[in-house]
Length: 362
Image: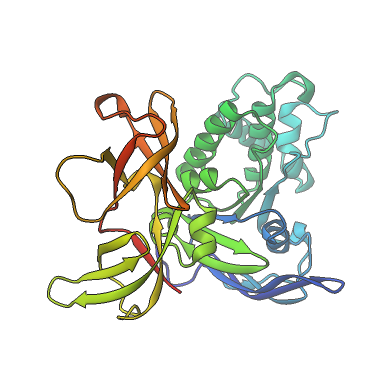
């Protein structure tokens, strides 16, 4: 997906509203055909950044470069970008077909050409035969498809999606998320998607741009963000995580194994970060699904802590346990638990931590 010139480049974007600085030097490159998601907690600046790309908000400083051209001073209608708003912003007095063809009509396309293009788009979003329906006679998911088709009508270079699924129920969100991704891949359009839903961001994106308090915390693939978070904020924001503090006691250069001392005992971990040295204070990022649980008796394993089950929840495909060690707790997830040991509250158990966990330097 790498190209010589990115389709979109953000260069040192700052934005203030009065005395409040919302964006603090945002720089990023988006490749042609890529789906990049801006994700972060409410108020982090993701929608403001999207609106700056679309021209609906003016940056205090910085550049928005589209396919090599600085478009930062152009109004929205002069940029080769199109936005799908959270509210869809459809015209209730127009039917589906007229909504989709509205931009084409403004561009003075011939009627026959408009009709042909609208039919192509109805087919693309799987709404064949519904062109004459009024907006109040189609479902929320269908309205979302109409808004998407309208945005794609003039074949923009970049499609901007501002939390387009937030008004849909949970099941329909999943369906439409997959549909958006399928359409985006089919026509290979560069897309920026905005959501506060971490799972949604992980499942739809080529890469994620994680924002917090107006600053980029990390840009990377879903795997990078989840398995190799750059800092404690990202580790805690994307999925649930158990944190455990420790000190690097030794590093075996031959085996590339580090020994980390924690308050509950020693752990042997894969050493794959050159910036971490003996004596460093570290934070261990332990995902619940990577930890195994077993009865407290039997053969001792490396990287094992003994604890007590504080709570348990069984949901068929998942058994979720909270295990207490002294004054600390660790959450353990067992997927497909039918064939594994099951534990009850107050059971004595062993928790085994894998060697391949992510380590953050304090």
